[in-house]
Image (cartoon, rainbow, N blue to C red):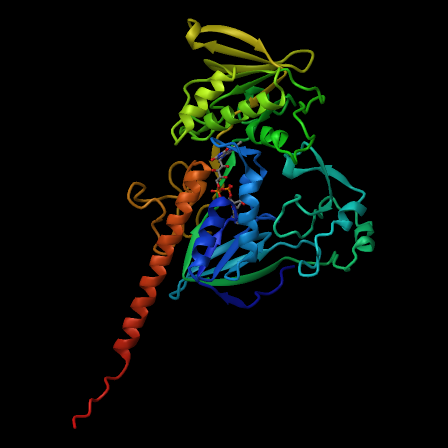
Length: 450
Ligand SMILES: Cc1cc2nc3c(=O)[nH]c(=O)nc-3n(C[C@H](O)[C@H](O)[C@H](O)COP(=O)(O)OP(=O)(O)OC[C@H]3O[C@@H](n4cnc5c(N)ncnc54)[C@H](O)[C@@H]3O)c2cc1C
């Protein structure tokens, strides 16, 4: 049962998605005095970036960059944060955009929850942790991760056995098993879409054996293994907990591949594979690291030097196309490859672990939810990508970050600033026009002559 529409909130701008791009756009607008609503479908903001270990090419800690931004968003007096909420519909209604939002139930009173985690400690249900991409464990009721913003628990009702232990443990009595989804509406002048990306599913390419072999993982899983807050605290292969001595990367394992319908280059995979290879060299100095690639795309500032440093550190780069990954009797992945620099010879190489450099797919729910279409590649359609990369074909709706196409963090932040600027300019122009027409409607004052 759905509760009736709650009252409508009148706000200047709506930002959909609380990843790095959405957060930056919201902060840039809020700092200029605009009232901003941020709607995020997950229980915490932070997007993909909060789950990463370090960033290329500086190797700065991801959490150290993302957490202060998450906190700034949550504490900004001009930002209204709505987490665990999904946009149902955006309508144009003459005043701007009316957006219907679904608030999913956390099964607790979010205003009362202090994030103390007593419910989590009391919960008897152990589950695979979605934040660690199912490699670690968590509980049916939990704060999503240690630096989550907001620090409010959420209950996974599908796995809850209604034992009531969390209810007894909660010091503020905020557990509410009867909570229902709620709808509310937002009236805004502009909308910024910052819905980001998903990665190509690990088992998308049958020939690569992922899904069957636990020791064939993807780039995001390796990010969690490398993160200080990761599932095991060090790099272990998920299949049997063994410390790997030999790790291979398979590039373009989800991009530039017509069989998957993903013809474009995902732009970040070469660089994140090189970054992870360097970080693994630091954690496991004796391990052999190989990157199987077609060509290396190191396009950004400092990226080519980063690639050269990895080579100097002993990371092996082998040019070739991986045809198949199978598994031997010890759960070791066996890579069959056409080695381009070796007379196109077909070779088999065995590793302890393989990381698929999966690509970026759009996570944009297309029309009619947001009124604007997706382009041929599935990312949000931008009519003038060279001259106005944030401007969609619907006046007043802008796009930023990986919602517009594959891009790294630097580009996402730059584009977020541009989207905020475009929407501020749009609002200023709209208000000026409204003032002019208001003045035109006012009766002319008679001037008295003395
Ligand atoms: C393995 C890997 C490693 C990487 N390493 C690096 C690196 O070292 N350096 C670098 O520069 N880049 C790196 N990247 C790229 C980086 O992750 C992206 O550039 C960045 O996350 C893009 O940010 P975003 O905010 O556009 O998207 P996202 O991070 O995807 O955020 C989008 C947000 O929108 C939310 N959302 C989606 N749909 C909706 C909806 N309908 N309603 C409400 N909310 C919604 C999502 O839940 C999410 O919180 C890496 C990528 C991968 C896959």
